Length: 208
Figure 1 (cartoon, rainbow, N blue to C red):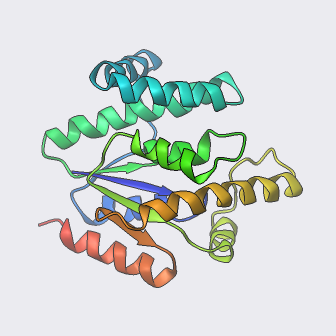
Figure 2 (figure 1 turned 45 degrees about the vertical axis):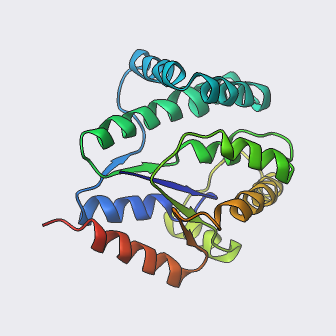
């Protein structure tokens, strides 16, 4: 089973991943501590196994990425993570995929996407068994940033960061609109929902 975590920066994805890692048998796939050749090969294996989906997603990333390392991080690393999660799942593991393929909708685009484009992209992403979708309000995410002491894109000025977040929120709103009606999606839109979903997952996959 693969549990994919999706959401805006500072939504609590890594916190939930840590909770599951500490209290259940789940294996968390975060950053891959392997060399670049293995990452490259696993991403190529994804293209071999899912050629239509793979090349369409690669083209989306290449077309929208700002820098070449964005292609590496958002295709090769992220899809290598997916293939790692898939392999572990086939071995019977419960796998938590922290920032899987759906996260590319927030990581890649450098221009606004309309609802139809978001829908098209989501339909072309590889499947996971459960998606935990974090859609927490701005004030909670800002409080999380204060607690952890850093924010994404630290190189941005306050004004640039504010514009960046508003842009991400506009895309996220379209993603949530589609995901919220899916049976395999657990929505987290407030702190009560976060605690409830966390408890449900821990109780479901609790260690013996």
